[in-house]
Image 1: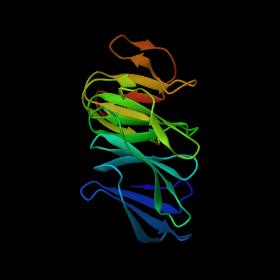
Image 2: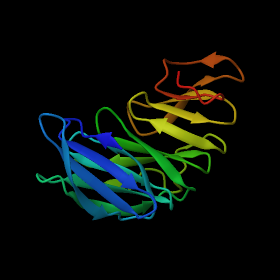
Image 3: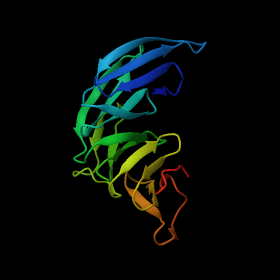
Image 4: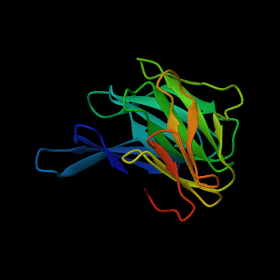
Length: 191
């Protein structure tokens, strides 16, 4: 569950029922609703807001979808169930400029999606494997830009010129190339 950037909506994904719930939040912080919408893909899980009331949703069944919240808070589908070609995308982040979304996949990879100004998404790499990080990706946090996993540690950052993730810290070698943006930790702690 997550509040919209302006705090006027609270969005909840229902994995078992494949629903997206949007609650209106008034000036006193009281929620009302929800408005319920069927997810375009199976098992909606993680999600992140973009810059223009758009919502980037990972679906553990193997895809990601995008929606735009209309004036009433109802999610209007823009791109439905775009396959990652990777296993179980569970977590989602959107870059600060809103141009790219990433899913952390249970197959041990990260998939990148380009996000168009209208909220439409398209897979950047045809095979969905923008970054292969090993099995066991467990979470990603939009707030911190952190990915955690159970295998070896390292850190990645989206390149400024495109959607690629570049390794910036390899804990096996102690190599540091840049300041971290997406961090992988063996212990599952945020850095």
